[in-house]
Image (cartoon, rainbow, N blue to C red; front, side, top):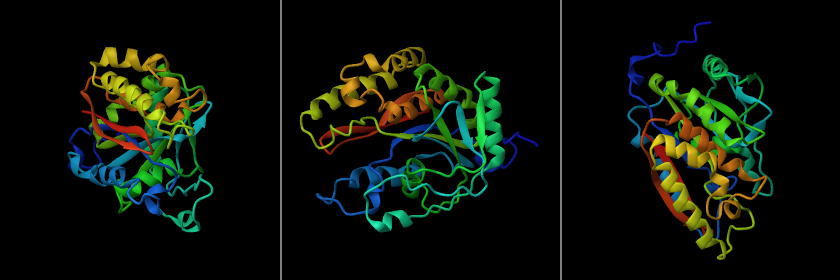
Length: 278
């Protein structure tokens, strides 16, 4: 099999940025909330992402906080199903669709790149896309016409390993592939809606922003030690940090580039942000 993707089309020669985006709460963008505008700002940000890219991506590699495996894994199905992995939401949210194709060739390329970096990687031929994938992508690319391959997190949540995995994938950016981390910059279920967490989340967000905006060596050093940041464990309690790790993969893929915050908002009394690496 030819796994060189650079020659597939000349229209995707522009180098893609790398993104870390919030995916909200379950199917939040597709249901009513009180107050009604709870998720409007985040939805507007996601809907505007495609217009900020240098070209339409040839494919998307998305790392969700909702898939953890012993070793890194990638979806290898040409027609991945959806996993409606949320509970207690209205019936219509379990009928949401997102028929974007997979791309087995790209899955093989990802496994090859990670393997060359010394990271064992498994291709899962049957797994579908969880809501950390299809919920934000329904807003970002609503036509579902860009192929999507999902990359798992590693269950040990080792920061250095996830940064290194992202770094191994950086070459895909020059092949028209958009690398996206999908999670939440604050993810403490007890904190949402609690005003006591408003200043705590803001302080952690300020630290996270400064880390992302640092030069690559300092950025990666800081992110490897993110748990020591101010109010890190108030923002991501032990055992719940899987929503932050996609940012570390994104930072690795963005090594050598400029990192910046591209969205920030107080939602449910907590600060939530998105970041981009160019």
